[in-house]
Image (cartoon, rainbow, N blue to C red; front, side, top):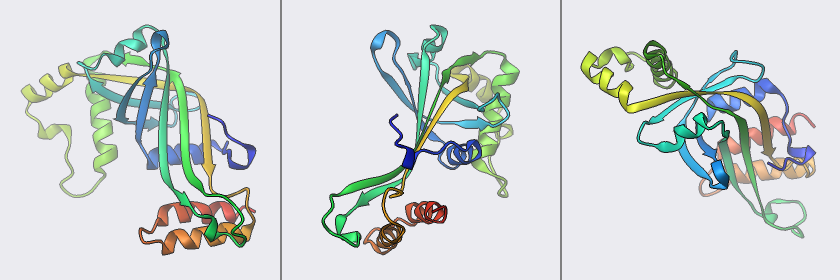
Length: 208
């Protein structure tokens, strides 16, 4: 990813929090130069190495997991709030349209989790992450043992120790503080308000 200095984020805690808030990513591998992508939900183990570790699973029928056995590097793309920015929102209209967005790219080499107890452990962990602690939350214990056994055989659990992270939060930081405020206000007042992106802009405007 090309991250101009104005839009680059290097703080590991901020990047980890972003992944946890936007865990649905695109796993891309390109063995032999042919790209292959799968959309998956990822868990993040912050303590899994220097930069953390991603954990997910896919259908065993999806051949992409075999790319890990070949040692292929993987790229996982996470995206957050994004939206169109009109030049009419700036103090000076003599500008061009653009798009503000938030994204993180995580790189690493995947490895398969084979041990049955670990497969169940990772599945349970992902369920707890996304179900939360609300009363009546679903868990693996809700499945009959026969169904759980069939499920573990039909999926492949894998983990990707993160070797490199790139974060680009394009939030009009190359504009004046006034323009950043005007864009955030316009996003909130738009026919389809984008409060999430406006909040990101507020956060980075406060750093100026």
